[in-house]
Every structure is written in C-alpha cells, then in structure tokens.
Image: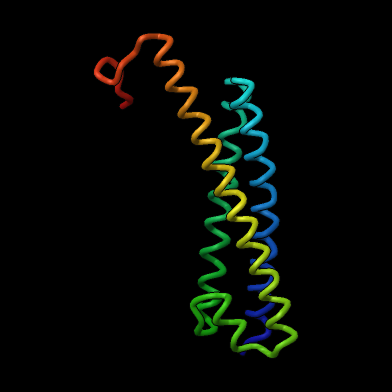
Length: 136
C-alpha cells in the first residue's frame, strides 16, 4: 500500500473536516440572517456558502479517486486493510467528518424549513396563491 496515497487521503479527510466545520459556522450565520430577514446579508453570504459546498464536493471526489488508487471504495474498507493503530486514527477522523456532515445537513434542513415558512407567510400576507405566482 502506498504511503504517499495514504498521506494524501489523510490530508483530504482533514481538509474535508475543516471545510465542514466552516460550513457549519456558515449555516449558523445563514440561520441568523434568515431569522433577521437580512436579505442583503443573504445576498452576500449565500454565494460564499455555495463556493464552499463546491469545494467540499471536489475534496470528496479527490478522496474517492485516491481511495480507488488503493483499490478501496470507502474509508471503512481502507481502515480494515490497515494496521490497528493507523486504522483507529483514520477511523476516528472519518467518524468526525461524518458527524460534522450530519450536523451540517440537519442545520441546512432547518434553514430550508425556515425559508419555506417565511415564503409561505409572505405569500399569505400578500395574498399570492400558487395559481398566481409560480417561480420559473
């Protein structure tokens, strides 16, 4: 097994974890902007958040390519092929990354529900119905 590829996978996982930690902070900020109905803040914030999610997707794709280079399809499978101390460290890093991704998903879902409720409230106040207004 290539030590260089293992090192690159480790670095990719660390970068992904750091990225998801940043995304979590951004999602928290987005929630505050939504709650405060800060539309200008959202216009500034959302493109940055989209850029980060694109970067995270690229990191995941790179990690998957590196894993394929070792003949494995997942970090779990990679861990099963490593010596115990290294497998434990890599497994803990992977678990941390998965946990952070789950937290981000939950917060993103919450932000989506908040946005949907604001849209519904606004449509109700304006008397807009789906038959009158349908987004393109």
